[in-house]
Image (cartoon, rainbow, N blue to C red; front, side, top):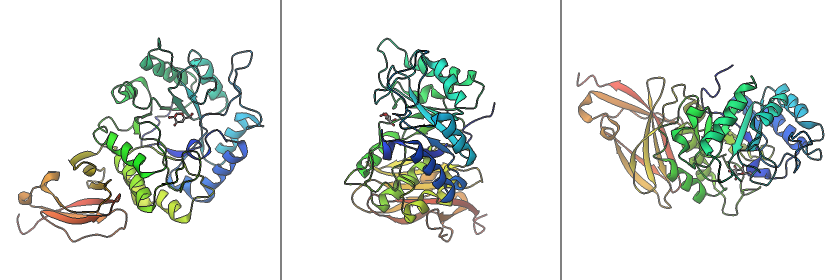
Length: 380
Ligand code: GLA
């Protein structure tokens, strides 16, 4: 079997925009757009159908059945189509007795359902946590589904989604998940983005190759539309902060906007080469928070090419003029090393500096740099 999730998984999920209103036609169009508009080639591979895809009852053999009105040709047909586009196919179930929207779920049907998914050519399973029986053991049931998926012999990425319940960062990697949701559901406004950021700034230590901390699907480009769309939706700066933070942390990137309608400016953001390079860095080392002024954060993150990244994220409603000192990043003024900073978002490179760097961060904005070590010849 292949080793899955060597770097953070990337793809599209139906929930944020479509909620229960999912159809075969829409999923096929989304796969088309992922190819035509460059998302696949930027690295987005998984097309994931979230909740509400099945009939409300199992068949007489206990199998899950795709709703024939929404998916008239069945799931294997759709999965073949998605595969024909060079993409991977994802589906959804739940560790409880019913999915969050009330459809049949996999508690005590783990192996049967895993076989069904494998027979449909599923490559990714998102596994939710609603209607979980009070007598059930969460860790054991996620383990059971991980075993069920592995036993099929098919490479199926296991996307566990128990919203941070029971400290999943302590055990999801060990039970065999490839990503684990650490938060409740995102909605498309900056209060939600900032809340998720705040809840995870100290929680990335377990993020690494093979199993990633999932901060929920992106809302970038939704512009207030769709199931989790909100009137006070994010503006460009706020979407940029969301994308930069997910990328900086090395979190999974599952897009939630209707890709058929996303504007060019948000498509460009979602396909930003340097932010994606940061997200997909091969070393997958988690970020380290070095400053937290109540929602104004400074992080560093070591990268595989011998550079490190600096991320400054401002969730406040006012701007910040900040001096970041290199000594707080472990590079003191007497180190004999200068740092050359390149702005990851704009591409601008600044002259090497020895002690500190001044920057301006707009309200709800961010700055992300790559730092290169330069030996200071005057000193050594
Ligand atoms: C939960 C999950 C969401 C989505 C819905 C579907 O709320 O956290 O991401 O999958 O269920 O009902």
